[in-house]
Image (cartoon, rainbow, N blue to C red; front, side, top):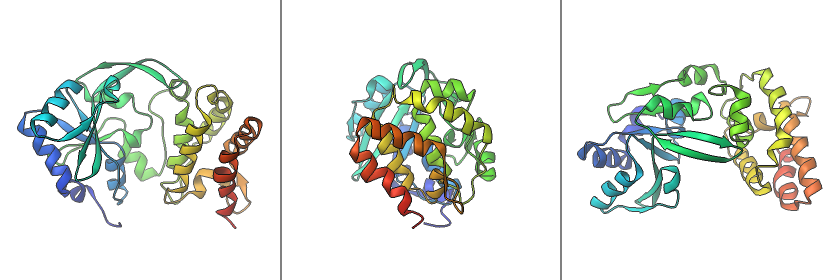
Length: 264
């Protein structure tokens, strides 16, 4: 949908219902992440995520009181999944990630929105939107959207070692923009760490993240440094070699081979 905006996001019935449910209990929640980012890009997002400044047991209490279905399989990470009108919505308590290595993390809860924002990967994914229509932008994500760039929050090498999937998420989000402003130093750092990522990420996790790249508005940006010269980004060949050595045929035949079809 073109010309989608924050007002339309806020006007969605399901969004209004979630806000009303928690506001009625004097509990503050805000929309966060992809749906806010996409609204600023004039796109409607399928992902609806809320952040809550109270703990998951309190989230569950409110949902139960309002007879809303939920799942608590991610309770240990502060996240509760709700189902309203067959739509899946995440409500996640504000938290800090500690002792984070690879993909593993321990968490502590907080009521500080900026601390929660600081744990997120990129500035464009650390935007919050309140029921009053206020955007909370702690790391200049709106500016980065305007600049068409993906910028890590904090030290890039530290953030990658906390979660190696961020390398692949970075390339996925390059597909949000028709012409992304790539920070060249990122490429070098990614190439330094990408081989080590396979010690922490399963082949299937990597494949699933790559498949998401094909669904972005401009997937060529995810895979190619220079489309006209058919120069692929280094990560593509590194992953291809890894999949070959691992004999991960589904990753090659039903994922990486699709890249060449994009320009043919």
